[in-house]
Amino acid sequence: MSVKKVVLAYSGGLDTSAIVPWLKDNYNCEVIAFVANVGQGDEELAGVEQKAINSGASSCYVVDLRQELVNEVIFPTLKTGAVYEGQYLLGTSMARPVIARAQVKLALELGADALCHGCTGKGNDQVRFESCFAALAPQLKVIAPWREWKFNSRQSLLDYLAEKKVPTTASATKIYSRDANLWHISHEGGELEDPWCEPSEQVWMWTKSPEQAPDHPAYVELSFARGLLTSVNGQQLDGVAAIELLNELGSEHGIGRIDIVENRLVGMKSRGCYETPGGTILLAGLKGLEALVYDRSSLKYREEIGLEFAQLVYDGRWFTPLKDALLAAATSLAEQLTGDVVIKLYKGNVTVAKRRSVNTLYSEAFATFEGDEVYDQKDAAGFIRLYSLASRIRAMHQQKD
Image 1 (cartoon, rainbow, N blue to C red):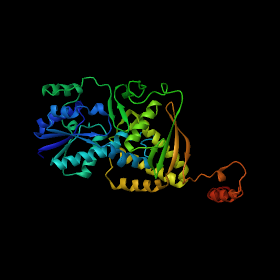
Image 2: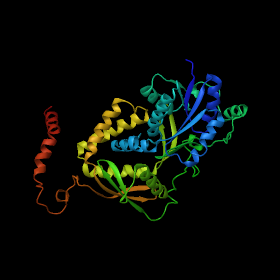
Image 3: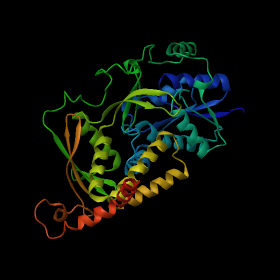
Image 4: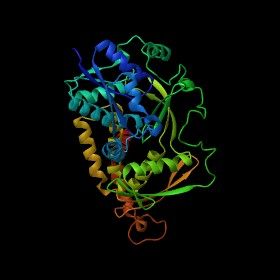
């Protein structure tokens, strides 16, 4: 299939800087750079448009997707309680649907006939992006240079850029591979490729180590309505501002660091370090509220939804009927999640200190160890007899045999 115009997901890093001239060389097409602002920071976005033009792109579009990321992906996902393999709060995965959708939208508006990304053939992101592309615009050709070109190292890419006279600030040595957005920052490579090696402090970029965190705890009050954050410490903030504030508070107290060996979608294991300070606080707050509000069966079902939803988000299946169904179930349950939670932050630990809700199922009158007039303890005998009836009958059969 011939290509006349391609929209490239562009970051300004070494890979995508090389992709621009490579596309022109190998596809003889116009290259339009698309940059997604998902909260990665002003430093990464500074000068990115001119950098794309200098690489050979005909134009560069920087699109602010932060509100979409928070309101359409992060907050809905939080209601499901999704955590991948018990630790990972899905920071990279959650950004991909909004980036892919905006890239497709731009391509259709500009009359492009192809999409391009800089994901490697070893990672999860190639699957995430291309699954979204397939669901939104299957008619567009997808170009994945890492699965086509001959380059196999940073030095080979640098040599190519030098040959093409494309300016770059990248060097042959890059210790870590990082991905940042409003929700988190991830770190891979360097000493992290050896799972027997403890991460050095140069790995972490946002959070203080617990050892260097303040010796006195901080408290933050979160208010929720139907499972959605409404205020932080009594201050009403939009989702982006709220997460930025919680990131600052959490980072100061060493909150949100994890070091995991995870199972990638493509089959291999990888080791990564993630920092998600604000997300860790938010998830703790919602779970603290769930403990008050959800009955046992509802909580168990929400946990099952969370496991399935985490796998779905990680695997890049956002634009699917299953996502809609799981999210509808979680949203229905979250109708009762209204209340306030006070979170204690202390040297890397997040603890629910206080919680309250108009929909609480906790009753001191029933739960007290003191005398009460609402619970007849004699009733428990009949309950236990019926609850254990199957075990009783089985034992009687065994004794008879």
